[in-house]
Image (tube, rainbow, N blue to C red; front, side):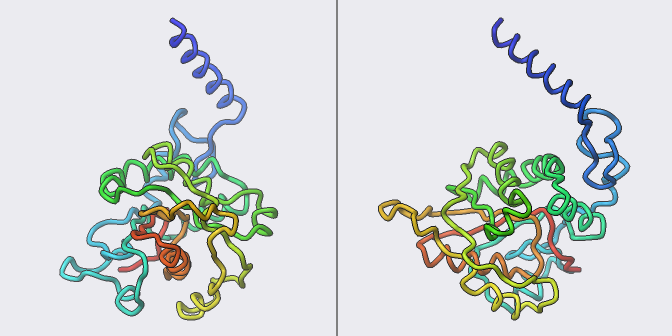
Length: 250
C-alpha cells in the first residue's frame, strides 16, 4: 500500500512539473507533441542514426563491410580499444548539441541518454567496464557554462547501465585553444598535457581496469586519444568510449 502511495505521488509530481515546464523537443525546440514523448515523432527523421558497417575502432560509418577501419583510424594510431556513436553529426544534431552546451538545454540529454542506453546495452555489457569517465572540461569553462555536458550524459547512462560514474579520476588541467579550426595533428598537439590524473586521487587506490569515456561529440578523435593516453599511463588496461555524435565517415 505504501509503495503504491509513493508511486502515485511521484507520478503526480512528474505531471505537475510537466504542466509547469513542458518538455521540449531536442531537435526543433518546440513543446513535444504528443505529450509524454521525449522527441517529436516528425523530428526523428532529421537525425541520422549511425548504421553498419562501422569502423572497428571509432564506430564511424565506413563504405564497405570488407573494410575494418575508417581512414582516420588507418592513418592515426589509437590508444583506446574501440567506441560507439549514436548519431552522425549532421545539421540537426549540431544545432541540438549547441543548445545543450550553450543554452543550458540539459533536458535534451534525457532523450539521447535513453537512446544510447537502449542502443548500446549489449556492447556495453560485453565491455564489462568498471566505471564511466566523462571527458572533463576546464574549471573556467565549467564556471562559465555551469555544468559539463559529458558528466550530465554519464549520469543518465549510469542509471540505465548500472555502471558508476567516476568524475574525479581524470581532470582537465590546461585550458586549450578552440579545436574547430585545427587539423587532426594540430588538435592532438593542442591537447598535449591538457588532461591528467587528479593529484589528490588516493595513492593506494588502483586505477580501474576497464573504463568507458563519455562525451557528446567525436570529430577527429584527438580528445579521446589524449584522454586515453593519460588513462593508459595511469594503469587502465581497457579503454572504450561512447558519444552522442560522430563526424560523417561515408
